[in-house]
Image (cartoon, rainbow, N blue to C red; front, top):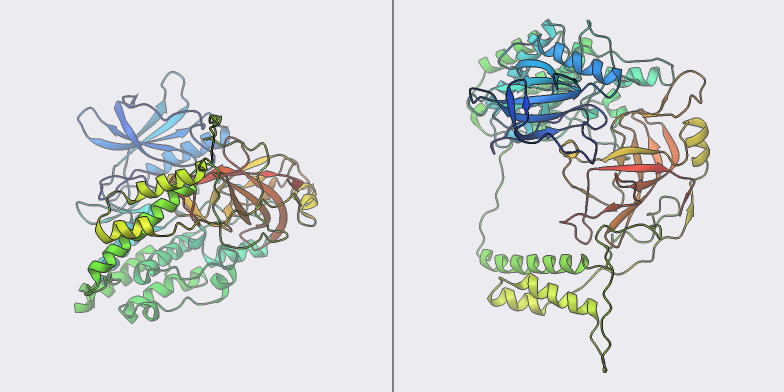
Length: 582
C-alpha cells in the first residue's frame, strides 16, 4: 500500500510501485480543489509507475494521503488495485500505516480506486539514520520487526522491505512500515508476471536467486516469497544502518553480484564499523543467512532477540554509530575560501560557455570503442531549444567572432559578486574548454544482435520500451546525473511481441535487466548506443538499441545543472530496437 510522504521539511513522497504511468505524458495531475470521497486535493505528494498520491484535507481539516490506482488500464491493473485495498483492511498497528478509507472515483463513471491513508510526518529511515546511536537503530529495527509480526500473523507478506518504505514519525520517533502495493495474501491470486514478484534487487533473498537459477527457462516458473524473504530484507536494512553500506558490493556490470549473495558471507559489521557490538552483529548476520531455516523462524522470534539485546545495553549504545566527521579549521581557511570562490566562478563560467549553442561536452574517455561506441546523433535529430539564426549585417573591417564574445560575457557574468583577489583571479584565469570531437560514424550492430533480438527474444525492429537510469531517485522522477557508460534498467518485464519459443512465454527480457552501452553528447542532447542486455540471473544478450526521449525523438535533452563531464538528464527514457547505428 503505497503511501504518503514525509520529511522534516515537512513532507515528501514515498516511492510507489508498479509499471506504466498513471497520467499520460500530456495529462496533468488532478487540479487543486478536486473533491474525492469527501476530501479536497491540496497537491501532489508523489507519483510512481502505478499510482499518484495526493495530499488531501478532510471536512474537519485533517490532512491525509490519498492514493489513486487506475481501473481503466486492463483487468490486471484493476485486480491489483482492488487487492491493495483489501490488504490494507487487514492491517492495524501503530508501526503499520493505517488505511482510513477506500472507494471508487468518479462516482458516476469509476476510473480509479482511491485509498485514503494516514499521512506520516517524518523522514524515511535512510534520511533519519545519519548520526543516530546504536540504541536508536536497534529500536527502529525492533519496531519494524513488530510490524512484520503483525502483518505476517494476518497472512500478509510485504515483499519490499527497505529504508524507503519505512518512515519515522516526527512526533513519536517510531518506525512505520508503509507501501504494501506489492504485498501478498494467499486469499488473492498472484498478479506477477515472470519469475519473481516485484521488489528491489539488493534486498532479494538468496533462496529467490537460487530458485531463479534452478528454474531458468522453465515455462510458468514463479518464485513464491515467504516470511524469510521479509526477514532477509530487514537484515539488509539492519546491516546498512550499522555500517552505512550494503552487505554485498555490486557486480562489475552494475547489477547484483548473485554469486556473492548465494555463496559468500557478508563482511562482519564490526570490521566495517568497530562501534558495532558482536552481539548486535550476530543478530544482523543471522537475518542474512543463506537459507530461511537458518534465520529466525518468524518476526516474533526476531523481536525477542532484539529485546534481549536491549536488556544488555551499555554506555556504548548512546554513541553515534556513524558520526559525521568534520575537518578541523586550518589557519589557511580564509585563503581556501577565496580559492574556492574562484573555483566556483570558473565552474559557472565554463558551464555558461558550454551551454552556449554549438558547444559539446567532452567526456574525457577517449575515442569510442569499436562495438560499445557512443552514439552519433542522426542529422535530423531536433534540438528543443533550436531557433532560426538571425543573420548579422555585414560591415567593413574585421569583426570579432560571436562565440568568443559570448564566452567573454559568460565569464564576466560568472565573476560578478566576487571581490578583491577572487575577482582578479577569476577575470585573469585562462578559460580552458573541452575540445570538440567528431561524431562517431555509422556502425553495424554487434555480431548476432539483430538475430538475437528478433528471433530469440521476439522483439520487433522499431519497437520501443521505457527505461530508467540506475539512480536512487528515479521513482521521484528527478533529473539524474549520468556518465558515458551509465547503464539503464528495465522497470517491468519487456514482453515479446510474439511467442517465438512456442511455449506461451511472452517475457523477452525480465524486470531489472541491465542495458549497457555508451553515451555521446552533441549540441545539447545526449545520444546513446546500447549493445548488451544482462538479466538478473546473469544471462547476457547482444542487442542493438538507441536512446530516445519519451516523445520519440532520438537522444535526450541535457537539463540545467549540466557541465563538462556532468550530464543531467530526465530519469525515464526509452530505447528503440534498431538494425544499425546511423
